[in-house]
Amino acid sequence: MASTVQIPLVGGTADGETVTVELDSNGRPPLTHHHIGPEGLAHAQIYELESGEQRDREWVYAWRGPAV
Image (cartoon, rainbow, N blue to C red; front, top):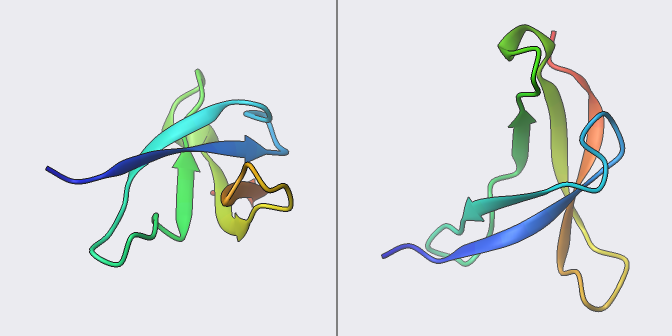
């Protein structure tokens, strides 16, 4: 069974939400997250993995902009 972790989303329309992602064989989450909101795929937002600035957050997904 793959390990998972919850990572907060920072900025954009999903600011403050968290996503659960699977860790790879090296214990790292995916480099990007495409957040699909209530408007569907056409309005997806791209979040990029960054190191967390706080001790209790190893990683965060920072908003980079719309997918389109």
